[in-house]
Image 1 (tube, rainbow, N blue to C red):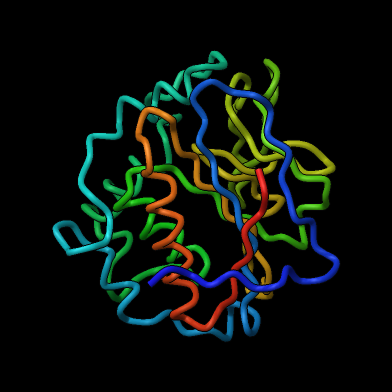
Image 2: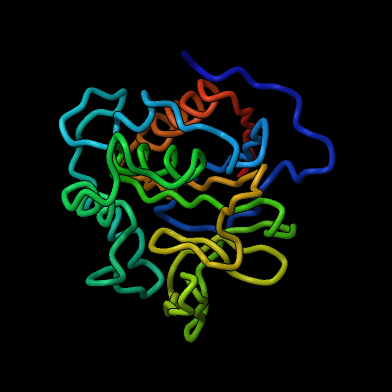
Length: 225
């Protein structure tokens, strides 16, 4: 069932400015949860998708080449530790890092489920920590940010990234620690990093992603791009 559009919540931006790009087919939306993430249970039906071979609304496609090419456009090299986040998820399932009884929180689990089965990288960002204006652009050479609590950094020069007032804070490889979800998160921004070389796939992922969140009691609102 397709998600029904509702009036955009007052006080929140309604759009994300996107720098012109020949291959990017991005979709962005705002999610409003009914309570802080630490208090919300993740539906068992959602985490059941943390497996290979389960039936989902997503068609099976070989997205690896098109997604990596999307990330290469600005000069970034999406290999090794810098491979797209969706490729990491396949390994995470194989190693048992995620599963029907193991996840992180509702926002991240929904994101990871759709990314896993769509083979598209997806960012999820705490909206209160990402001050507007919001935009998507390729980062200049030498750009980096911290991506985990240990303080490790990633060089994102040449990579597409979601930017807030302070700079880049989310991307198709790793999101910034500065704007990651936490126990008190109530609003998130999701970015599906789709490619024009996979026509219709972004919209298919977007529809399923929003429906999973709606089924879990959240509200979602499209952001114009």
